[in-house]
Length: 396
Image (cartoon, rainbow, N blue to C red):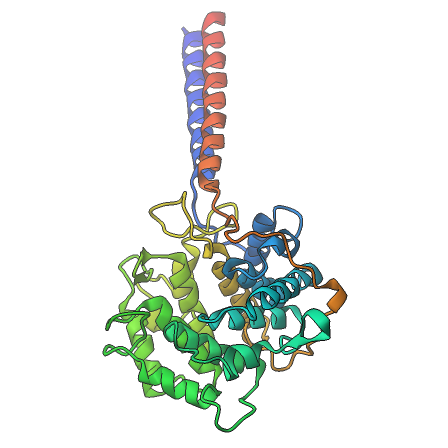
């Protein structure tokens, strides 16, 4: 009798152990956001995941000149964790190839110049002297800002990033009559506010991500963060928060919008970790951003669809993590290169990358892979426990 009771107790202990192991396994399998560690640790984890072990700048060199590739370069260059030459040379090669075939980076999208200029500056190279063929050079600020026919042709984005680029590099127009210098860009941008006090690519209702970008540019250009325009724009962003703490834009709650809100707060000198205007139910703007983080270090585009990301998702997430890292270290804002010594590019090293017009983003549904692995481990654990209990019964 005692032996039977003892065996039942052992069986119950075995089942309890099985339940604990299963719970632990399922915990590992869930794609929960990770909040532990410093912002630098989180940035390095994303860099490692996106670079697939070979270094992010080297891995993304084939994407030089694309939106996602160049924003990755801005972030990694600002962190200074990798050799900038592989990406910078590929980017200079892409500029040279496009100038040779098209006469410039774009006839309609000024932001092509702005993004490349910011990437080169972040990597430590001078965007005002990019080597072309026949010994000539391209000044991306002159071509993309000062003499570009109409930086607002593509919409308010053109003016936002023109102003952001001028502020980042500390340059003003070389001619008094230029209509794209920082003060006039600022005035034009303020005139394009929506009735509710923000900015939009189209329509009369503010887009949270575009509004956050505009705030970032205006604060970088010296606008008073406590002034009427910036304060009203922040109210627009604050009102866009959902009960979950995220920010609802045209595509719903996205990682990119949350990342740009963090950048806007940092550019304005506000604390996104503790700003009361951006805390809902104890969830700060940073918490809302990190909710999109997967357990493998990458970020999902939306919380409702973990399998499909926009190409820009992880690049813009890395921008926000880098900005938070620099703030924590007491360093200048992510896009402030005014005190950085920029080096000339080597004409002999500027080699165009292999064509990759639509580089694959970090879209592998890592959470799915983790869940599959977790389920497999759970099955093994359950099978082993069942076998153990069956053997104990036979011995009894």
